[in-house]
Image (cartoon, rainbow, N blue to C red; front, side, top):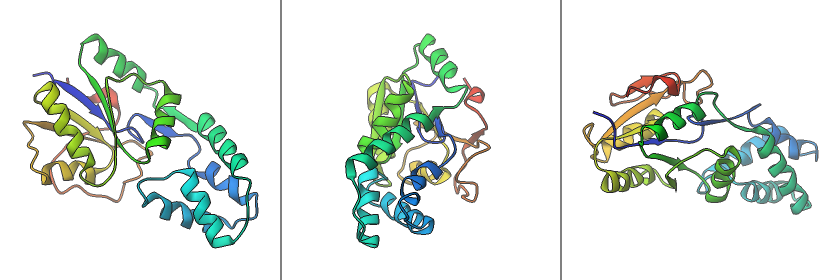
Amino acid sequence: MLPTCIAFDFDSTLSRILGGLQGIFAIFIKRDVPKELVKECYEESKKDGGFNIQGLLEKIKLKTQKSFDDNVIFFEFDEWVKSSIALYPESISVISDLKKQKIPVAIVTRGDQSYQKRKIELTRVLYDELYIVSGESGKCKALRELMQKYGNPVLFIDDDPRDLDLIREHGISENEVTTILILRDDNHHQDAHSVHSHLKIKTLDEIPL
């Protein structure tokens, strides 16, 4: 039975950051901010509803008591995003095939609204539905809305086993949402282990349809 809709996480599922996060850190390191302090502020900024450059800048200002030209920082950051964000090689062809099969495509991603939207816009990835959520239950709520609109089963692919586990813990069954854990070579959640059972793939080409 084909899924009524296929939902993808964005970061590390459809897309990646070429060169990792060093480009963000470099913006401040060249202004004599210690790398460890930048990394510390970066991790803290992720907790405030998802990373964004303004939040990072404010935390670095607070801890260093330095002044920066905000507009220049924002410009350099956007240039870094434009040069670094990229879809995985198979993402375009997989989504194109889903479009040909008339299977709706959704992106369900957690993070800061403006930063996530900017990355998605730059990749020009095609989708029918977009949910940028916050909080641990955000993805579950989005999936329930997709089920309500398209019916069951929705298929959801994510690189974080904890997010997939939350789907089950929020009472969404396998018959409602098929969960797939994508284990890419550059997966950032290598040490995280799932409590519940999920299908596993290494690339999007392996989606069972």
